[in-house]
Length: 308
Image (cartoon, rainbow, N blue to C red):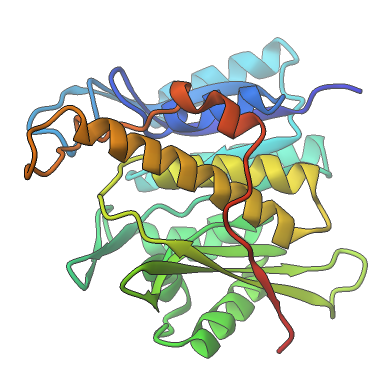
C-alpha cells in the first residue's frame, strides 16, 4: 500500500518544537511522508526573550511550489496548515490548496486556524485582524478538518461559547462553512482540574448524520508552545487510520498529548529549583522522548458520544 504524503505549511524554529518541528516528527513516526514549507524560520519561538529569523514571502512560496510542479511532485493526500500572519501569504496558500484539490479530488485539507487564544480569562488575537475574514471566507470553505480552539471558534462564528449547547451550535455553524469534521481542541467549559474538547463529524455517506464527541482532558498546569501544532498533526494521523470513528481517533490524540505534556512538565521541573516556575525554555515539548507514546498511545482518556 502506497504511503500517504502530506504537505505541511507552517512555521519553523531552529530550537524547540512549534509548527513543522512539532508536526513532522509524529507524522513520520505514524507512517506519513511529509514535505515541509516553512512559513517562517526563527531561532526559537517568540515566547523567549529574544528571537530572530526570516519570514517567507509570497514570491518565495510561489517559487518553491512552482518548482515542485515542474518536477511533477504535487501528488499529495493531505495538506496541513498552521500559523500564518500575512494576508497575502494566506491567500497564496488558498490558491495552492485549490490547485492541489483539482489534481487530487480526494485530498484532505486539515486547517488549524491559528489566530489567538484566551490568556488570564481574556481572548486575544496574535495575528493581524484582517486575517479573520480571509480565514472565514476563503480558507475554511476549502478545509475538510478544522481545529479551532474555543476563542477561534467564537471569532469565526461570531457566537459566544459559554455552554455545551453553544459549543455544539458553534460547530454546526462551522460545518456550514465547509468542513465535514470540526474539533474544538480545548475549551474552558470544564472545571479546575479538566479542560473539555468537542468534536463533530458529518458522515460522508449521509450528510444528515452527525457524530458528536465530548472529551474531558485532565488539566496539566503549565503553558506549552507547539501543543496545538502537535494536536492537529495527530488528529490528521488518527482520523486517517480511523476515518469513521472520531471518538476513537480523539481518544488516541488526547492520550498521546497527555503523555507528552506530562513528560515535558516532569522534565522541566527536574531542571529548576523547587518552588520555581518552568519557563518556555524548560517546557519545550519532549517529542523524541515520547516516540513510543506517539506510535502506540496507552489510552488514558475516554470520550463520550453525545446523542443530542
